[in-house]
Image (cartoon, rainbow, N blue to C red; front, side, top):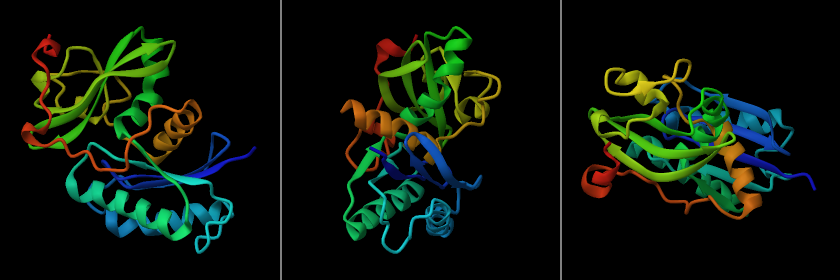
Length: 224
């Protein structure tokens, strides 16, 4: 039976996507990390309209996926509150996806091709830190082993790194070419979310993961 979902992510930039039967049929995004609130509502309306779904009723939509971070407070809150409000208004279920898991799902096949049996996804946490998580990679299928964390780049486990964190700290992190500016996107959230929903695992509570300061510290045994 055909399923259609709206996906949002504001953990880094703002983006919206509509996915039907695992295919992204509409997508909007911005490269700015500062204007989430200003553009997100327009992106949602445009994506739904392109997918021939009436934004006023959302008839034909089966649910909403939203990236829950980690990410900076203001941007992350904008996406999650929007998803919760729309879910309440439209009487639809809303599911949380760790934004790093979405990005890991996107890059895992490329990681497998370069022989990375384990890898790290890292994004900008500001304050000279990165958000990151450590993944196992079985045939291009990622499984999160540790994280998410927020740390200075030298404290990240020494593995191939995918994501904008590697581009920011090339001396400390072994970034993979072609992926050193990658950030989570709504299409990643949709792709991971639909698989996680079918498998009955991997989804998160719809609560923001800020991970600042002492809230999440890397275990010492992972610093090698």
